[in-house]
Amino acid sequence: MTGLDRQRKLVKVAPMLNDNGEVLIKEHEIQYDSLVLSVGGITNDFGTPGVDQNCFLLNTPADAEHLRKQILLRAFQVVTGNSAVPKLRIGIVGGGATVRMSHIPSIPIQLHV
Image 1: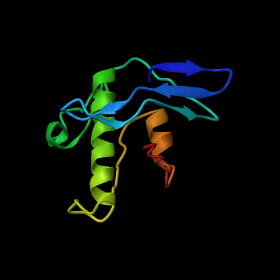
Image 2: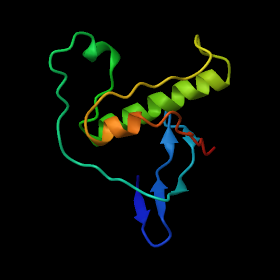
Image 3: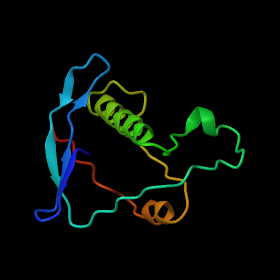
């Protein structure tokens, strides 16, 4: 996110680059009805085995960016037939608002290319 236009209800999004610096998705805006910006907190995995190897923790903006890139990469792999799985599945584990979000059976993902 590079900017927010509250009057027009738009989030301005920076371009997505691959590891070589090539633009995968150009800079764009996404319109919203409701927007939640959440800050603070550090993830506690309570020593659960496998968390380090299998989960994306969201403690920093860099963590969120890494998760975003991984979701888009895996979505592209599924769409182009370059994935070992037929569709992308995402599990959400957390507390508070995260748990409420996990009750949404399907969240449409728009890939703006």
